[in-house]
Length: 412
Image (cartoon, helix red, strand yellow):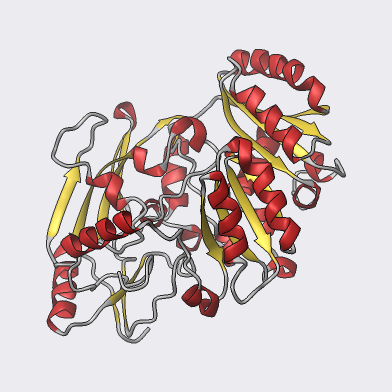
C-alpha cells in the first residue's frame, strides 16, 4: 500500500509521527483494519500501519495478567488464555460479521482495536467494560512523545488513570504499542436458560427478574422472532418465535443448581428450554458480534448501537420502528439495543436520537456507507461543555491533529 508507514519499534513510531508533524500531515491509524468503517471516514494520504506491533510479551497466569503488543490478534490472546483455563472477562466483541471480516487472525480484531473502541460483550453488565480491565499501556502521543501509564498489577498508583481515557478514543489521542490486561479464570460450565414467546416488554421484565435474583446471572439478551430465526443454534432458530436468553456460569454443581432455580423463576414468562456449553458459547458469540445483522441480504442495512436504561428499551424500539423500517435485538438485560434499519440518506438519525434522548440514552451509528457517515454524526453529539473539554483533551495529546483527525468528531 503506497504511503503506508509500518513501524516495528516505539522509536520508529515516534519518528514517523514527528515526520508527519514537520510536514503538517496526518495519519490514518489502523491495526488489523477490521474496524476501518467504525467511526467517521478518515480520508488521508498516509496510513500508520501497526501490524508490526504484534505478539504476547508476558503472560503470568498465576498473577492473572497478560501483556501483548497492541496489534496482537484477539484470537491469539484467547488461545493462549484458554490453555490455562483463563479468559478476558469483558468478552470483547470483534464485530467481524458486521464489517465483513469473518476470517481469522487480525481481521477478526486486535487487542488494541478492542480497547481503542472500548468494545465489551454480553458480560459487560457483570464484569465491567474493556477499560476496566486495562491495567496499563505504552503509547506514543500525537506530539511524537512516548509515554506509559499504569502497570502490570491489579492495584497500581503510577499516576493518572489514563487507561480510562485511551479506551474508547479510537486512536485520536495516541497510538498504543503495548497493553497489559487483567484476566480471570474461565467458567468451568456455561448454561443458558431460554424463554420462548415473550414480547419485548415482557422479555425485559424476565431479564430484570433474573438479574435481580441471587443466582449470579452473567448475561441476559432478547431476540425478537426475526433475529432468533437467523441463529445458527437450532434450539433458538427452531423456536419459531422470540427467544430470551439468560446465561449462568461457574463451577458445575453451582451452575446446575442455579440453572434449575432460574428455570423455576422464569417459568411464568414463557416456554423454557436449556442450552449446555457448546450451544451456549455459539449463541453468545452471535449476540456479541451482531451476527444476526450479517450476511449479503442484510449487508445494506444501517446499524445503530443504542444505550438506554433497560426499562426504556422496548419503548425506544417501538418509537423508532413505528417511523422507520427496522428491527432490533437486546443485550445487557435490555440496556443495549442493536438496531438495523433500511438505508436512508440521514440514517434516520433524527428519529433514532430523538427516541433515545427521551430515555436519557445515547446512540452510535455503527454501520453505514462513507457518504452517510460523513454527513451524520456517528457518535452522540456532545453538550457544549463536554465538547469543549473533548477539544482540550485532543489539544493536549495531539495538538496538530496528526492522528485520525475527525474520526470521532468533525474538526477534532
